[in-house]
Length: 247
Length: 247
DNA sequence: TCTCCGGTGCGTACAACGTACACAGCGATG
DNA sequence: CATCGCTGTGTACGTTGTACGCACCGGAGA
Image (cartoon, rainbow over all chains, first blue to last red):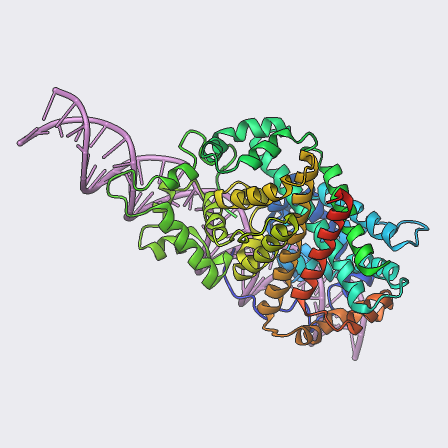
């Protein structure tokens, strides 16, 4: 990455905590740069040019400002990523009127997958930062509240919530990884990918060590239908939770 | 990251496919560098100094060789990562004697979590590369074979397999992310983390927008028992699959 | 035996990265 | 009018991935 030390910077312990600063409107004079503008610009870059294109220099260029300017507002790239995650996560809408825990969790899961597919750079974000942003916490709050009404103990509620979240993230991440791998090589379909990948696979398959893999990977008919696969997995997870917790 | 272009490098389409090259013993004369040695050194660095420490220069230093030497054997960092993933994944052992699909999948899931926790750098690897390595495919093969004997259609087999895999990866990744976030700040326990994180959380919580989150996160007693949480989630997923597929 | 030649490893070099640090300008406040 | 704190600027350093050309060696063909 880069030089210098970063330990103990702690993302604003003495300064008023990024999120607090974000919500008070325009505290200082001559403020052309705001957390809002910074977040918006960064997300725009990431969406248009990929997550790797979000560099402090490119961001400054987009903001029409010197490379170091943004550092007055964010502690570094970690803060910037948190800002970006928070911004796009605001799109996640509470399912209107749904009170059933299953409906709520399912809705958020599907929305989260869509969101991550729409902003693939979310897949490579450091996970802990994902949890501590206002809009992510609002999502968690809504899901925990939906589970809370079932009369479960706290541990079960947290475990159920995290189980679904883990599946959603793992699933979306895999899907995005595959997609980017394809796009990086210019393949546009699953079949084309398999054809292009053949030279790399041919040796492995020719060893005859993966007969089942070979057979199933070829004979599956919905193997490129990720949406179906995701929904299937999600329903399995929800089924399992319902059964195991008796709700 | 770095300069230059990388599109279309394709990781060895004309050359004999990394994995093929890895298995033939010592093809060329004066070969002091081998894929085995490279992989071993890279893994050692990653385990001891973290995944970010695996740079081509550090690798060369460990191998007692010039910075560019390894490029004769791997196409770049992508290949190196694939090599590393493959190497540590060889530790995954087929559960001896188990024929029940559930036992097989469960065993691999638990082993995979352990493996990822033992080699946390696995969490940040690009996912597609994870699937196309010999030892990962051997793991997939074993699991698919276990599912195959249940008489399911190919799509169900693949979906079930990928559902579990997604959960395992998402879960382990989250856990590793949290752990590294803690370690980066020198916190050693969940309580210490919560205390240290308080300044950042205090504003968010003081808004009163996350009452359920607040309540449950505090009252849960096993919230730091990740192994239990993982096992719970895993059993939910397996329950759901069994129920939905009728196996 | 001498000559090539393909596979290895080395050295240099470059563009781009994150960010530390000192400085400059402005608005509100005394 | 002087002062202060915050905002944006400029320069600079150390580190990254890797392109490119050269040097060397061991075995094959003459």
